[in-house]
Length: 91
Image (cartoon, rainbow, N blue to C red):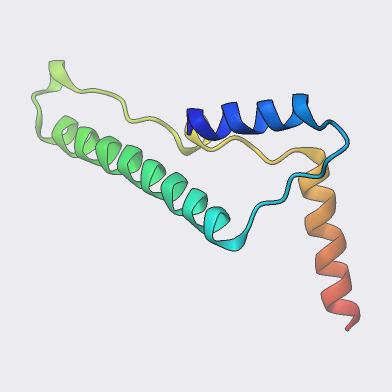
């Protein structure tokens, strides 16, 4: 992904007035990679948690809470969700 960041940075410097557009393929690819990373982290945490349950009392490890790896949505996201929900209900 560092190549993509470098490309976007170079494009912004070379043509600041240009609009950068992402196609469906790359959006889907990026989402799939992000989901894979998230699932890998969650799987690791589940394994650690299950090992902690079977470990003796003195060796128990604490599991990471969901809030630590999934930040709360910002105010703008919450407003967008509310607006879209209201539009759906209006229809």
